[in-house]
Structures are given as C-alpha cells and as structure tokens.
Length: 258
Image (cartoon, rainbow, N blue to C red; front, side, top):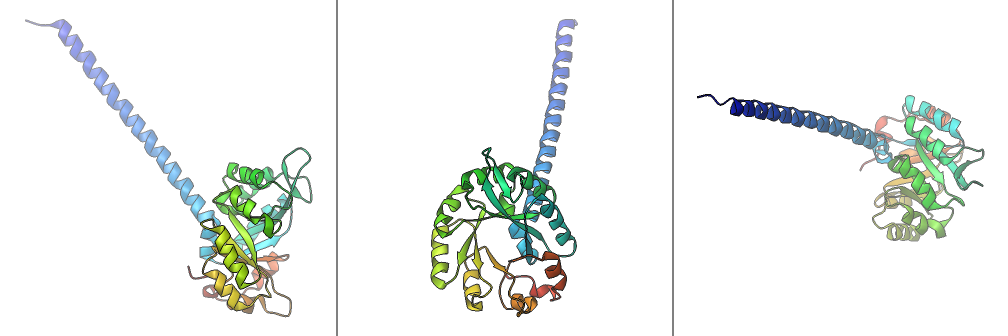
C-alpha cells in the first residue's frame, strides 16, 4: 500500500533540509570572507602604525603644516624612510578642530594622512584633547598619531583623553624621566628630548619610553654621527628630504633594539 501523502512529506522535508544546509554554507562563506577582510585590515593597521614603523627604522618627521605637506610626506617613504608630519591644532570658530595655519579641518587632514599612510604628530595648543581624540578614533588613526601637549601641566589631561594614542612628554633631566614614567603608567608615551641632552639621558629613557623623539642637531654636529650615538626613533626636521638623502649610515645603524 502506498502512502502518497507521506511521500510528499518526505520530499518536502528533504528539500527543506537541503535548503537549510545551503543557507548554512552561504552563512559560513560570508563569515569567512568577513573574517579575512578583518584580518587584512588588522594586518594593514599593524604594519602602518608608529611602532611598526619604528621597528623598521628611523622615522623622519617634517615640521610643516597643511594637508599638502601631509600628502608630500609619502614621498619620504618612497626613498627609504617612513613619513611623519608635525602639525599645530587650534579650536575653530565653528567648533571644529582646525589645523594651523590655514583653514583645513583636522578631520580632512586625518583622512589625507590615512590614505597616504602618513604618521602625524599633533601639537594640541588650545584644542580640546577629548575632541582631538574623538576625531582620531573616528578616522581609525589611533596608532598612527602622537599627541604633543601644550605644556607639562596639560600632559595629564592629554593622557586621559585616549588610552591608546601615544603622547610625547618633554624630558630634560633624570627627574623628568622618572616623572614621565610615573604619570604615564601603562599609557604609551614618547620621550621628547632636546638634541643637546646628554647621550646618557637618551639611553636612560630608552628603557621605559615606547619611542624617543628629538630635533635635528645644530649644523656643527653631523646628524649621522649624532644618530649613531643615541637611540632615536623619530627625528623632527624642517628639511626632511635633505635629511633623508644625507643619511648614509648602514641600515643597522638606523634600526634600534627592542
């Protein structure tokens, strides 16, 4: 005796099961694709961040202003050195954080820097640290920016603005070095030393700070010799292209031990 009704039920059941399996496969494929994209995004972030750049050598920072110079900084990368630009910030009349001099907003500069893989050093001046941190987070640039407080007193407020963005703390003595390490705590920070500081102070702060920043030395001192005798990660200059092309030291002298 046949049971057509039951046969129909079995057919429907098998069709539903097959459809369910197909949906599961599609969902798995979509999840795998999304995971791959996420891994690539994380890899790109890690390879373009400040610490990754430092690991591969000296960072030359151009002390300039404006979005045009941010785009030009990519040229420094193309000739063998990572590119960074130092910019001054101010609170605009419309409430937006602006880059000075000029009328560019911080948001537009961050967007340009992100697409050109350029690092930024931001002098906060009178800009609100929380507003700056918000814009940096929104642009996905937290690991590619260094905050420079207006003065030592405002360092604590800048450290509290964002737990991940590196903050440059000026250090002129051993006491400053101890205080910087104390107030930074677990927050990533860079020690900003004068080029006239003793080599021993550079070595001392190298143990605790995530990065060491300094300006180019006076013309009386060979920049190559200066860098060879000090553990410098980021050097600020008004002439980035000339500095980059003048550094003829072996690559081993331009990298730093972790």
